[in-house]
Image (spheres, rainbow, N blue to C red):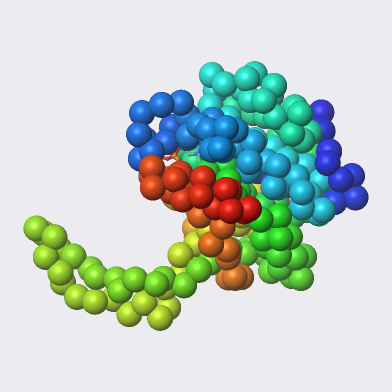
Length: 231
Ligand SMILES: Nc1ccn([C@@H]2O[C@H](COP(=O)(O)OP(=O)(O)OP(=O)(O)O)[C@@H](O)[C@H]2O)c(=O)n1
Ligand SMILES: C[C@](O)(CO)[C@H](O)COP(=O)(O)O
């Protein structure tokens, strides 16, 4: 049985946390690496659990660490922990299969976005509640974007006015996310991409700078600094 946070909540949050963290460099699986003395996953789950609409959290952990992650998170929040897969998409599918009856809104949120404010969880959930089947938080692209070819030679400058950098949590009507995963083929990098393939509109809402994804060592240093100044 999956433990509940707020039995009146209507949101389940899936937390893919089974990635290796190759771009961060050698070490433990990324979600278990420390940020100011606590694993990234602990920071992420604590913030999700602080969002009042959240009924259930399901974490997809590295298969070898499922027991350890259960122990790690027990004092943080009531969560279910399942074994993740070789690709993010498989980890999300495993977590989705463990969501109990009840929540009709499902958010998918990277453990690696450890400092995401609970307010962003709520605003994505609210947009789904308002009638959108699929919602992604986004930031504008702030750099000039070049398309390059062989030898890293610039082919041209891309019009960035219609480009957005997409974050998580991504929010879905539960039936839509389930249908997208059932229809899924080759792995994509996010869940909204699967929903796009169904032809279902995906709507953007404002993201947050604090929802940065810890991907490379610089991101970890930046997250440490943000925590030190009160994030
Ligand atoms: N097989 C996988 C791969 C990724 N993830 C999770 O998906 C989120 C976003 O993935 P990313 O930041 O790309 O993490 P990694 O795959 O660990 O990073 P890398 O590509 O550098 O190894 C992370 O919370 C990660 O743990 C997962 O649950 N299962
Ligand atoms: C889901 C995601 O975080 C949205 O930006 C991103 O697509 C994960 O992709 P990555 O290539 O595994 O970092």
